[in-house]
Length: 387
Length: 200
Image 1 (cartoon, each protein chain N blue to C red):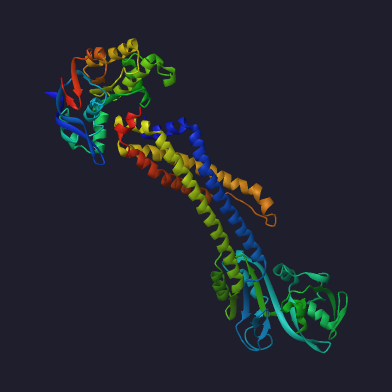
Image 2: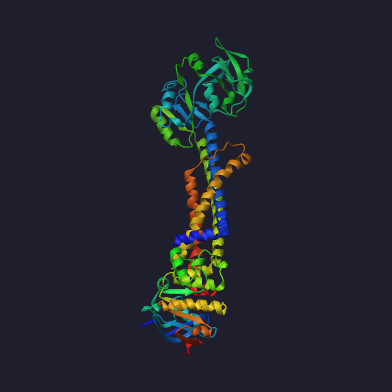
């Protein structure tokens, strides 16, 4: 019988103790895995939501003539010189290396027009892309535009022109039908008039020019900086800006979730380690006679340590496996009750599985070292006196 | 040449200021293949003598050697190696061994038919014979038995002594601690110890 067989035999012999140790560590590992899984799943969900929440990259003309403000950003070269962006730039944007991370491309053409004697900023947009980009847009009345002559008004603009859905606004010779009015957004959109971008290009003789392009990038798995560089290369003469607030919010959300789950996980592992430590210390006290006999028949101190640490290794490895299984399965049942607002998914994560096993073994061995060394230092004469 | 040699060996236990000499300048030689009984009252130092011959503890002074190996100069791990190679201790039943060697050893003590039994299913005499079998597993030349018949009735005790006599006949050197004079007479030589000193 070699040392590993002795350890395995002891594990089998003391089924109750083994079950207790495995359960204690497995609960700790399981809770840590569950927390990490939920944290990761929430992270993914939040990131996805944030990705869908609006533009995080703006493409603007490089020229700074005649600035106009849009959404707090200066939009240049709307009416004068410089290189205008065009609808063809959308194709170039699609050609960048990280194009799979681009969720929505929303080009805009901003023009100043006079309606009913009042100046108004008209935004030519692709309504489909715009509604995908601005998920917070709600109609207070009417419906989404569905044809070229339809316009959408911000709440303040509708109030200013005293129009409601179904009304017609004369725009020179053109008649534009108000299809809907946006609910208040608290942004510049409230004072804008939105029309189909192709109609605006045609009506204002802009060819295929656009003033700016807003991009929503799914950046959970991509560096936004790389995308900005790739877009700058693909669009020479354009200025590509990452919207910092959105990214910082994303990073902050990620940071909080990771910090929270990591902190609780470490705490749980410490508690699990203490359970192993006390259980193994108690076990050594119970096994004084056995250790004494081992010593009497010629076991070196290293052999005693090896036997006890091998036991700790097997137990913690098993606990790691059980803990991972519990930790990855339990959130599937718990999450719908606790976090119904989120659509969380818990795919198998081999890295997390490996981390659970390694963490479990490290905790088990660390907790087992002191009792094992203490056992190895037992005086065999004293131990055998108890026989 | 003597197999076991103790020369002015002492064992002193110290608890804070108090010193207690369990063995006091003992000199003793035991030849290879001898069967020696050690007798003496409780606390006389019999078990201490056995533990320093077996390398379980080291003498505080003097020389203790077995088969030419000076045990007083060995560290804990070398002493463990010595115990593994040279000594079989007879204490009580225990199961730790390789199965093939265990069966051979059980055969030597007439217990091969009961190899599947649990300790609780064996009588006191049978458990003691298993303990002897365990001591034989590594085929050590030296058997140290501490009160091997202490908890047994006379008939069962005699069976155990028969086993030890058989091992002696097979060439093993045996040192047996006992309180019982009749048992001591089964050994070829009697050493009497009192207050840590050999008196006979």
